[in-house]
Image 1 (tube, rainbow over the protein chains, first blue to last red):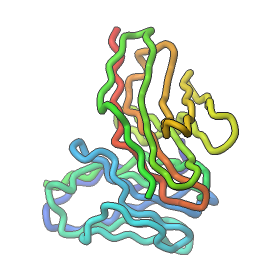
Image 2: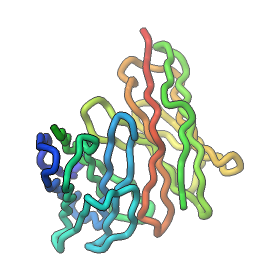
Image 3: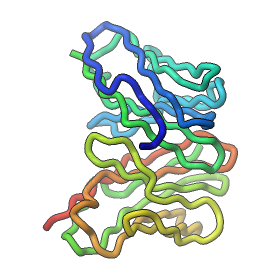
Length: 112
Length: 113
């Protein structure tokens, strides 16, 4: 158990819909990362927050957004969903600096 | 910006053979380097990391990696592959005060009996 909790574990939704994925980082970790993993794209960095502020942005679509709340949990919002958004979405947390990131078990999103 | 390149998206070895998974990094500042493993339907798990100090780093499950600055490499090795090593392996880079950890595309390791 990495200490990073992601909910839900599985999500099936229709095209055009909006979903919210939730991540609770390890206790004390200030940094939260979101990644998308699909068969054709591999592991893609989406966005990172550090203590509530956006720190880095990767290949995140404009239809996607995220935020980190004062209690440090984070949410990834995916809207106007397309079939190609079907993937595993991982959250990871770290204490920052030179420390490793700890990953959650992921949310498997299926868009039908 | 930092980045890593993993050479070979698929590597296949026989049980008992040497495992060598390649990773090259790009960084304008001293890097911190990591190897993660992902088993099917699971999240990524840390195998080992290099931050400072000894360039040969030992990790879990008999894996080790050597940081070679002159070659900008951080290859992962294991002397003798086991069937349970079959998984996907990711190399990652960050640096001090840079919270943007970047991952390679991954290498899928297959172990043949």
